[in-house]
Image (tube, rainbow, N blue to C red; front, side, top):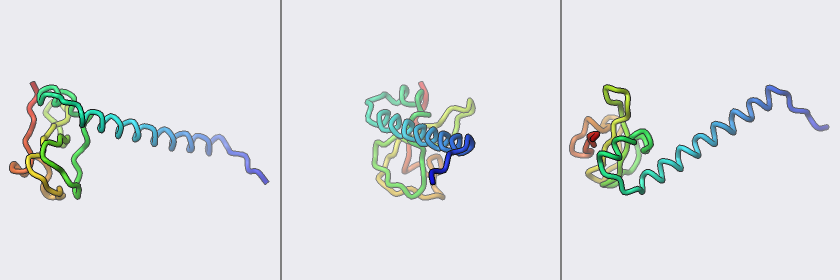
Length: 105
């Protein structure tokens, strides 16, 4: 027999779909921003749109990632200097040889 969905079931289903679509949009924006040819100053102005730094990921030179916050609460943007796999104990800001902080204009 067909079970009728309750309002609570439908709300849960819609919340799950909404979360999925937000993540999908965020990933799409990060991919688009990652291929745009932005100056360092302009990229830093839009740091929140870049992919967040994460441990156990391979990073290539030139890739821009965000990690941490400036005093005003805006995201800090870094550029990868050397190819490496990130480690939990060495995020940007702690390993100067791996990342270059991009200053806002």
